[in-house]
Length: 72
Image (tube, rainbow, N blue to C red):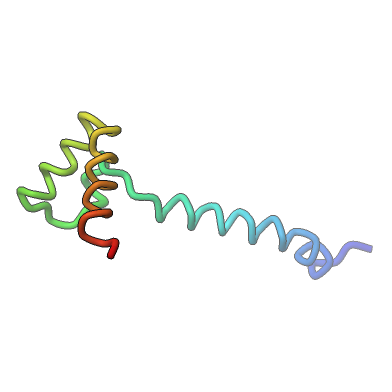
């Protein structure tokens, strides 16, 4: 006999997976989404525009700066 608890027990892994997927998609940064970002300064706008225009070039610059400033 199916009860509410048996149905919830059966569906709980699917509900957990769906919730995890929703959280993962919500945490992705989208530089084209103006509603997502905080107030934009001039330099942030330049970086976002560079990423929109030349994604590979922007990633190359970020890797270069990471090596230069973040790696000892």
